[in-house]
Amino acid sequence: MANMEKNEKKIIYNAKVYLRRQEFAQAVLIEDGRITAVGADSDILAVAPPEAVRMNAQGRLLLPGFYDSHLHLIGVGLIAHVINFSGLSSLEECIAYARAEIARKKPPPGIIRGDGLNQENFIGEKRFPTRRDLDKITAEQPLFITRVCGHIGFCNSKMLESLGLVRGDSGTAASAAADTPSASAVFLEGAELDENGKPNGILRGACLAQAREMLPAATDEFLRGNLAYAMKCALENGVTAVGSCDIIQARAFQRVVAAYHSIYRRQKPNLRITLQNGVADDPKYLDDYIQNGHVTGAILEESYLKIGALKLFADGSLGARTARMRRSYHDDPLTQGVAEMDWALLRGLIEKAHKNGMQVIVHAIGDAAIEEVIADFEALGDPRNPLRHGIVHCQITDKTLLSRMAKNNLLAFVQPIFLSNDLYIAESRVGAALASTSYAWGSMEKLGVRAAYGTDAPVEPINPLLGIACAVTRKDLSKQYPKNGFYPEERVDVYTAVDNYTTAGAYAHFDENRLGRIQAGFAADMALLDRDIFTIPPDEIPSAHVLWTMINGETVFERQLA
Image 1 (tube, rainbow, N blue to C red):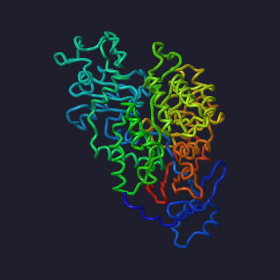
Image 2: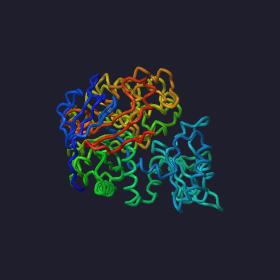
Image 3: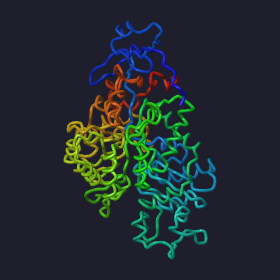
Image 4: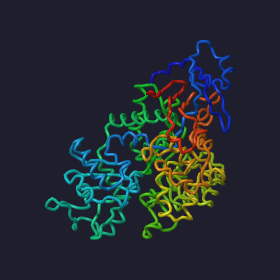
């Protein structure tokens, strides 16, 4: 990376500068990328060097830069290059849209990708698409679509042929009886079966992983393009730092890091990234991380790219009914979800990472998965939790589980925006009693569970204001439903939501002494909003916009006003 030029001195004045709960200032002095003074306009203007650039905020709200605690930057870029089913409201609309996209883009031979499908948004029948549905999109090329959560996939007959689960027979897909596993074996491997005992195109578990393995490897140029696009999206939304899980398969580590280095060599760094690294494909890669010094806190690119937590998976998603539950799903008594990793293996990885100084965060959504992960962390024997281990998503909970998290100082990496969709399915999936204690951000606050907010983008939009609004209102943000919010006792106030999107994110990534607040000594990472989200009606928070984003004292995004 080229040497950073020293930033010019700047003063931001005539602002409403958020410091902490119910405390505000008016002006900020910045020198060489750091905040050197905060206070009233008169005081800061009086001490500002005469050469300082003056920026009039025109009375608008100035917040610390948002810190998204968990997302997938590569995924944010990828979603722009595939058939994006986000927001479509019926299976028929999905089919028509995909046919039109294929006709428009004319994809080359090979697997056609799709993502973002959410059957819970369908008006009317809310079912997963089968291969018969997807054959209507294309019968000539393999088609592979993932649900918005990423924990269930759908494919047409051509894709099933490629996977060896069916074979073509006079132009149609038929059972490969001679070389296809028995129906029960196929189901256990994750290929759902139709009423005739044949794979229906709905994939989970091992079959889903096999389908992903068949996708062509991204070129280095494609990888860099995805990351650069995603970083731009973050800055446009006032996000200045992220915990990004770009490395699910550990063998991709060097390629991902090389892509970041390449971007930073071509331009000044403009987004702070902590890598959350996985070992999903082979546990031996944890040894490689440790032996190569790729442990939590290792700096890869000055103050802009570093190693964060080891990211593991305990279960799937609520929407796909793969979140691991202690009891059967209310709307599907035949399943309690899916364990994404053998429990003994999961505990072994947690123990090894802990002994080698690595933070561990585990994807766990269902109450059974959360309970097991808590027990695994408790077994480490140190309730102070100095490595700041935590649970990602942490959705289906009760008071006992949250109390155990608080007792052991376990962090919760949560995405309030999830509730905007999940409020329609939570009770049907887990029952009213358990739904009432889930997505329990108010209880987390009261019990002392430190919650760091994020988006899990591209699962949800990267805009933090949507998450803040959902945490405060507990409503479907597009329909403002229900009127008083979903179990409104679990709402938090705007101060809590903002802090959880700034200071808590910094703490979760060991950055609390330099990021997440507007105060002297901290990096000048800030976002100016066009509306005061502390005073406007909470239902209007989603309509607020970021006017400019600053990192290290430099404006890295500025909205062009009409």
